[in-house]
Length: 113
Length: 114
Image (cartoon, rainbow over all chains, first blue to last red; front, side, top):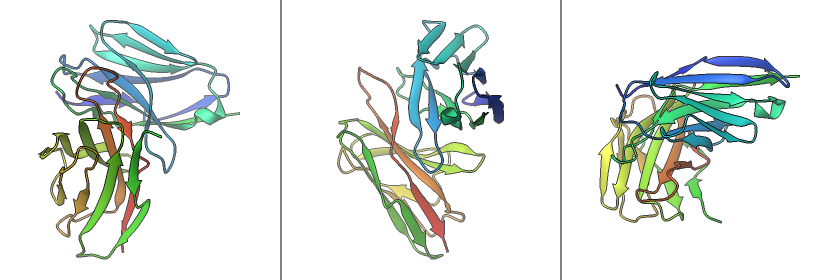
């Protein structure tokens, strides 16, 4: 019940296309859902996060869509660029319970020109 | 500059040796975490601490030890009992109170056992 399942494992997208990464969770107590971006040899950086009281959050080219009833959330990268090539992790936690983040296994995105 | 620092960036260890990885934060965060990252495995939680002088085991605590004597510091010791310690180690921190709930990561330490 603590797992966060992420798909796909890897993704290749043409420059200018839309990258979509999906995550699913079981624990209905989760109330904070962030996405992280990691470049090789670096620590993950917080990209965007959402709480379950909204269904969508947009920051620049990055959008989180959240479906509470399906217990799923996804990251959309619009107008994908080669500089977006990185590994992306979804995560979830319970803020009220002050629990650690539970991470998905990551998606390696390659944006090709 | 506020942030999380980890040292060293690269660390080499002989089998049978204990090594300690440093993690310091000046974000005034209450909670700190250690993760291990292996290729294709994502991030696995080793230990975490929500307040000074208290810490809890994560999913893969065997062969590791930690201390939290100061709010800003959370060192990780990789002991000789850890059978496969070669990995990328990441420290993170977050606030336990109100405000932004993002968990912020340090730059990591790559440990290689020779």
